[in-house]
Image 1 (tube, rainbow, N blue to C red):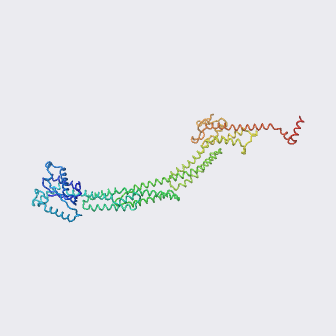
Image 2: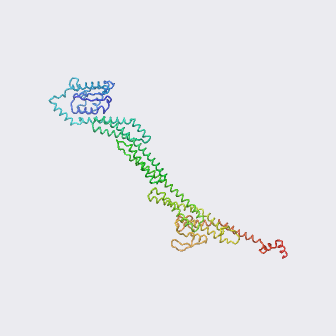
Image 3: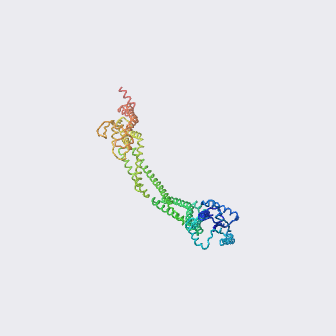
Length: 582
């Protein structure tokens, strides 16, 4: 028997490429199934280098001995040396590419050793296992029976093992070459900088080069192994280039988003409706993104761009919502400013001339200006195509803002009520019915005038004590007049409606008035009235003093008849007449 193995020179020392697993199997089976017999192990080294064969032969022999020592042996052969089973020989062949003629000559010589294996110098070992020709048929049957019964001798398994090793080596080689391919490196670098036209076509061509090369080099290996390793190669290669694809999609997404922002702004600037602008810009940019994805797709894989597309769609929606909120906020601020201008100063003027109809006028003003603003605002936001609940909420917010403007102005004016009361008192007290300044000649009824001026001031106070935008009637004015002008009041209890005498101003709230609508509490009204009377008392005193002074100045003048006489007779004649009478 003889065993032959061809090795490439550069495979010496490798585990799989040197077929060490196969040798382990051969050793184990030989010891388990056969008695010691000489078998020649011939190692043929392909494409020998300048390294002398005598240097390579010890390495191979040492490897064989290590394998022999490492295999498990039955007890009967535990100490049997390798030399009892095998003769180890090494030969070498020159490179077919570099020295074709010498290679063929060496192969012919080696072939003769096989043809003449039983001749002296042949490959056959000892002749103990030689079977006569008459017993060859039976011997062959027994050999195949042993092979079938022992899976370790199954030749297809060795074929699969060889295919596995070589196909994996070829696949790794193709993957390595792909990683250093100049076209790929240039493409990858370009993608780092921005979008690349024809990315999918160029990458597909690069990948196809290496996949086709793998198919050619593995054509004669086991079909199942070859296909399995090709799938692994495809998977690793696609994983290797996939980050560049994702990077490219990122560029497409960013560009589409920026284009959306620009187009939306342009459409809004020329007066297009907001919702229509959003729809048109979104469709255009999503179509642009889809075209980019189609250009980036490769034929070797069905890469999914849906997640990046979803991210783009979310970004577009987020920007659209941001612009919408900004535009709506801008509109809301504009109409709030409009309401502030149309309500603030008119309300202040109405409070300045406060009277019985002040709050009715304020309510009328508020209703009119709010209606105008709400109508215009509704028309302005119609192009946004908002849902009804959102529109209703925004309109209600605008109405609430208008009401708050009035309430805020009312609170500001309530804080200045004492000043306004004194101004009102001064205006009424110091001017007659024709709005002319009074001259205190002594004929005026200061008491009546003072009461009228205080009544006007108290009317102003009654207007300022509470916010009356709901139009509900109240008894605040009556309570203030009966308490502060008359001094007593008869109040009606809200519980039993029985009539009792009490001070209704000794309270921090007004009946039938919501606490949030109270501007000046009853007890504050009492305090304000006391302060008001104290600070206007001087004005009354000055008027009384003016009357007295006027009367006294009139007492120093002569009687009317004397004045007439002096006018008629002259002063000297008048004095002579007085002396004659004397």
